[in-house]
Length: 380
Image 1 (cartoon, rainbow, N blue to C red):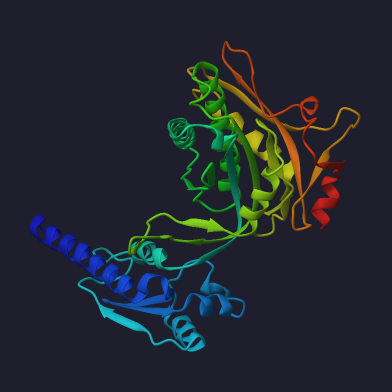
Image 2: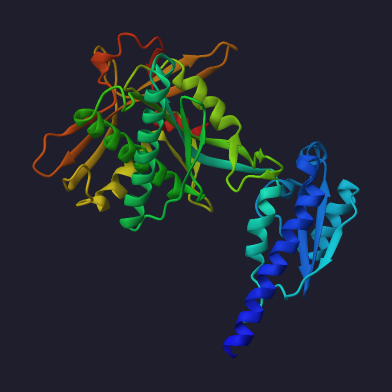
């Protein structure tokens, strides 16, 4: 194909994608309706729009309305339109959708469509960082602390990718901190989220050692795995390109971190399905797997020194031996279970960097503790 033909084809694709976005945006009507599904045939695409409450109300009968891709085959698309009593919106495009040479991959359109959807994720690791005493700082100090934390998040993502662990960290602000998660899904993505947490806190701790304490935040952090919904917040009259999350996992994190002490790291008690016939993994098994992966990060630069090891251990009160879980009650009468975590970061020619609080530093942590049985947790 000549360069002129290639250029014309690329122009047609760009024009077609703009047309799709225009049609989606016009039909979206500031969020009054969302895309429940779409399909394609040759150079034609069809979209099913419906009110969010109707889509969510029908999701139990047809889970794919909120789970996985919105791209459907013709039969599933027709079934969706019938269930929602929605008339499909069909448009002709200046290109052919498909996987053959010269065709536009449907995943390109799927990426565009997702901005106009609400999606459910059954299981994902999410981190919550909370800046201690944020409201007591001046506006200048608040901006500096948020900027410092954002840098640590960006740096952690970059380092994991440099080490060959594909990670795309997303975040949404909670005012005095961030929810952070890996856009990738699956057990491996969740394990990388835990490693990201450790690298973020390492960078933050080193910055506090050498920087102005008022400009670098003191953090408390919580981590767990759970379900959530994703949506795109409206900015002006257009949905943002980045999603927000809300659901069981964010609620649990907010409840867990409410009683956390400055510098404390809490990891929730959870079961993570491994997929297929591999079964499930609970929190202790998750930490063990994460440590195995962390061994591959040896030599990674952390504060201008090569990383030798990352070790995560849960703590028990001084008079207890064996695993201990903390029960954290919330104002609604619900109980959330979590482990206090202590992390050792070993670096070349440096004293170990200790993250989190030791058991002797938990005097102000007002959560009940109880013995933890990993085998019993797996049977639940």
